[in-house]
Image (cartoon, rainbow, N blue to C red; front, side, top):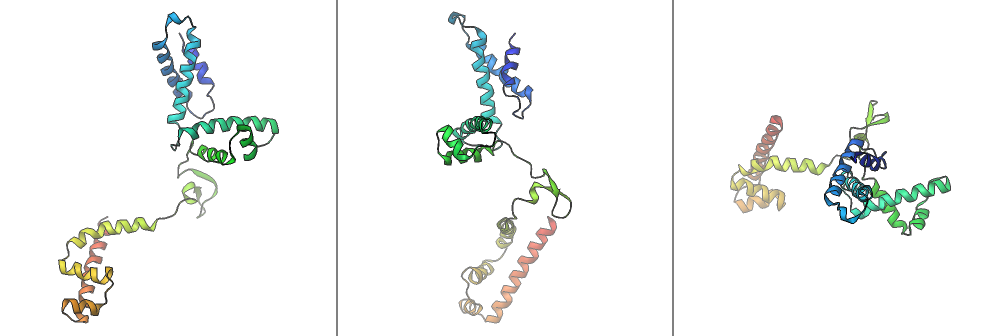
Length: 225
């Protein structure tokens, strides 16, 4: 009997970019809550009682589930107020309002206005594969990933460490000690020789043998990958 009331309330949120049927279904949840809590003894029309429940449920849906990036509720609410103020000033001034004008109308600081504008960017997101107008870096179609982000060298280092760890575990205690002295303590080959009781030439051969073994193990790991 009251589906039309839900559709009326949902119509206020048309243009948000969400499927209207999803909004209507959310409003139906609000309608069900209103039915459960309605009491005839209050002598209030059901439509007047139910509408706030329906609208509240839809607003909660937008607030809690439609943001692409989660931001604090305070900033979510600020975004809504900011949009209202911008629309009001734009119609009044026949141009886009400045941060100062928005701050004056809303009686908040310019910093808060900027914070709200930045937070609004979290409402929608774009895929890194989203096509952009213009040519790509190699003459093909451009996508968003071509223009943002950098390759993180540290990630490669983590992968190398992950591959190297089991190879290090297979070394003898003496080989690991030699590597530690040479590359962690940064001792010279002569100093390592003195501590091990062997010649510098022998230390050089040992280090070369250990590194060759590790390198072959790493390359074999990459080949298997």
